[in-house]
Amino acid sequence: MIQRITGAALPLSLLLFATPATAQQEDPDTLPVSALPLADAPPAVAFVAYLRERGPAPRKDWSDMQITLWEIDPNRKKEAAVRRRVLGRSHWNVTPLLDSPDVLRWQVPSNERGYAVKLLRVDYATFTVKELLHIKQAHAFGRCGSQTFLNTSEGQCLFDLKTGARTERTPPIRLLRQLDNDWLVVVDGQLARFDASKNEIVRRYDKIAVGKRERAYVHWDGGRFAVTYGGFVDAAGKRVHSLDFGKPGIVYRELRIWNLQKGDERKLRVRMQARGGSGIGVIPTAMHTELNGPMLRYTERVPLGEHDDLAAFEWHRDTQWVTIEIATGKEMLREPSDAHQPTPTVAKVDVPEYLREGFEQSPIGAWGAEQDLAYAFLDHKGAVPKFPRTGVTKLGAVCRSPDGEQLLVMHDGQFYLGNLKTQTLQQFAAPASWGQAIVELHAVSVH
Image (cartoon, rainbow, N blue to C red):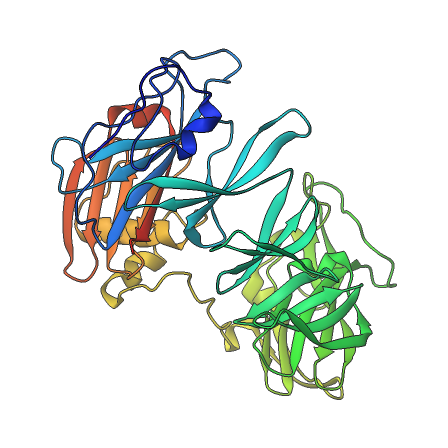
C-alpha cells in the first residue's frame, strides 16, 4: 500500500530514499505522487517514463523543473500512467546507464562545476530508488556483467552495479571497439587488446600509435585485421583542416589497416569528395569499408575527368569499389559502385518480416531504428498519427519490451501499445500534463 510522509517539511534531496513505492514529502513546491496502490504481483515487463516537468510554481529561471518517474499500466483504464517518484529538481533528465534502465545516470545542480552526477538504482516493482554514487563527473564507456567501466573526476574505475564498490582501473584505457569481452583499446597512446572479463590487457601493439581522431571510426569483425579512418590531406599529403563553407573539393582520407596478428599496420590514402561545413571543416561524401579475410574493399571517388563538375556529384557514377590484398597492399580489383552493394548495417532492433518494407521506407530515419519500427507498425495497423507539415517528423517517444514483442508509443496525447507477435494494437490517453513535459519511455524486466 502507498505510504506518505507527513509532518515537518523535508529537503527535496532527502526524498529519494525515504520509503518504497510513492512515499514523498507533502511540500507545495513538489509535484504530487499517485495514491493508487502498486500491484501485489507486478508484471514481468514494466513500462515506465522519465519526465522533466515544471513544478507547481513555475519560475522564470526554470529552477522549478523536477525529474519524475512514472508507472504505465495499460490495464488501468482511467489512469494508465501515474507519477510514482519525484527525484528532485534539475535541468537534466535521467538516462539509463549504457543500456540498463535499472541504473540511471542523473546530472544534478552543483555550485562547483554547474552540475554533479548521481548514479541511481531503481526497483521498478516498488519504485524504490537507491543512490549508488554521487560524484563531480562520471561517464560509463563499457560493461562486463555487473562491472561498469567509468571515467570519473577521480580517475578511471570499475564500478560494481550490485554493491556500489569502486576499483581503480590503471593504467586507464580508451575503448575503440568491442566484441563481447574482447576489446580494442588505447593504452598510453598505443593500441592494445583488452579482456574485459578479466580486467586485463592481454597484448600491447607497441608499433601502432593511436591518436584521438580514431576514437569513433574503427571497423573490426573480430578477425586479424582492423581498419580505422584518419584525417584528411590534399594530393601533396598536407593536412586539410577545412574547406570553404559549402564549397566542394577533392580530399584524401588516410586509412590505417592494423594487423592484429603481426602487430603492425599498413597505411593508404583514399580519394573522396567533400565540402566545407558550418562548425565541421570537412564533410565527406559516403565511404564504405569491408573486411573479408585477407582482403579489404573500400569505396573511392573516381579521378576527375569526364564528370569533373563537383557540384553535380552522383555517388553511383562518381564512386567505385577498390579491393586490395592487405598483406601486400596490391590492388586486386576496381569495379563500379553499383556492381557491389555495401553490406547492410545491422539495425539495433529486430524487424519482423511483415514490417520490413515499411521499416525501410519510414520517413523518420534520423531518429533511430525503434522510431522507424514504431512508424512501420502503426502504418501496418492504419493508425499513423498526423505529423506537422513543417518541422520534425518524429513520434513523441517510443520503447520496446526486452523480449521484443511489445512496442509502446506516446504521441500527441495518446498511447499506442502494439504486440508485434499477435499484431494487435491498443490505444489509450496519455496524461494531459505530458504535453508540457520532456518524456522518455522505457520498458524494463521486473525481477
